[in-house]
Amino acid sequence: MTHEVRTAVVTGASSGIGAAIATRLAGDGYRVVLVARRRERIGELAAALGGIAVAADVTDPDVARRFAGRDWRCDVLVNCAGGALGAEPVGTGAVADWSAMYDVNVLGTVRMLQTFLDDLLERQGAVINISSTAALAGYEGGAGYCAAKSGVRALTQSLRLELAGKPVRVVEILPGMVHTDEFALNRFRGDAGRAQAVYQGVDRPLTADDVARCVSFACGLPSHVNIDEMIVRPVAQAAQHKVHRERLHWNEPLAVPGPRWV
Image (cartoon, rainbow, N blue to C red; front, side, top):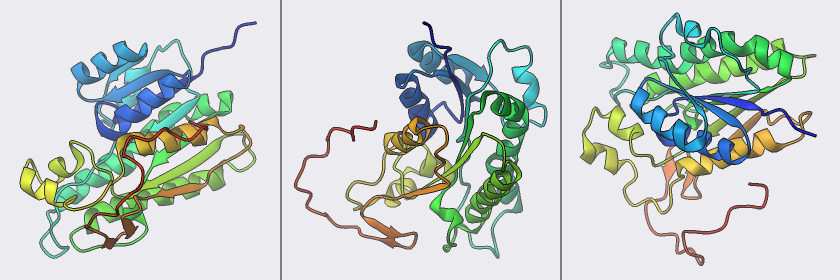
């Protein structure tokens, strides 16, 4: 007896959390469809994972056309494309930055949902939106990003209510401090010093694969089990505004086996 291959679509898959999620889900047996603007990056990763690369920008109002004529259906949609721009206060922040953050984080998620919602209903699938703990509380210099991720949170909650009575899971994962190669660097427009200062002294911030494990866990549960929201932070980050920046003196080495459920 053969089992039909399940397909997971992951946006923002060219680097960081998105690439880690695609890699983790491929290891779980999904055919992964990697979606991002950087064709070469996703092409290389898709080839390594035996997946499909779709060069597309979620901020394109016509992004759905990039998936026209596909011979596969979406079982899991992971909306990971996003990011932050700048850290200026509200009074001096660039409105263009706010608009760009809203477009990619919120409207990009909406566009992908509208593209694949029929598939997810037909396949009794799952939507997993990667939000942020920035959606839970504001902080100085983060108003634009907090507002955008609050938008992702609001639309996720509304979608869950709108799909009540349908066999589709709607999951929100809210990571705290995650150290990736590009997030802070993009936020500070290539200023490596400012980007590195975000993580200065923090003993083991989250990695992209830590978040990918959470996605894998949510997908791997029985289909009637929905993780409404999963807040995940490093131990060193007690809250959005409370980060311990000294050693924690862990007993075990950094490289530890993953939990059995991953």
